[in-house]
Length: 102
Image 1 (spheres, rainbow, N blue to C red):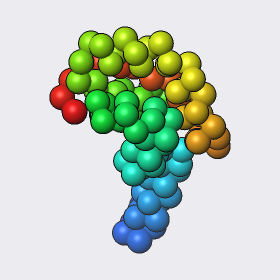
Image 2: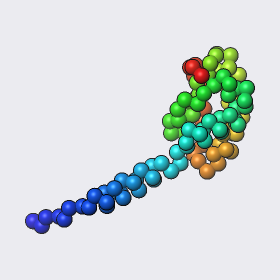
Image 3: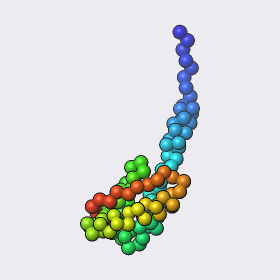
Image 4: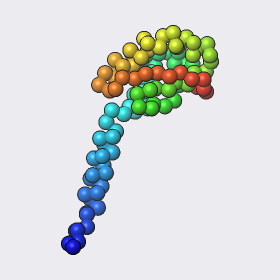
């Protein structure tokens, strides 16, 4: 049996970096999410909310009171449309509101 030549470290790193960059495509930065949320929800709602995490295409928003959760759910489809316009080249985003600290 022939022995394989060892793989150079720089080749392994190139491959790892390329794979990481491909996985990162389409992901949103925290700053992008914060700016989009402020724009889509409005300043008043943003004072009572905080984008907490993004799981695939669901944006989880912590809300400081049940009253605000109710209000945001009434306007959920409008907010989602605004977010999706903001990130027009990304995957469609849905929102999940939950009680939490803001």
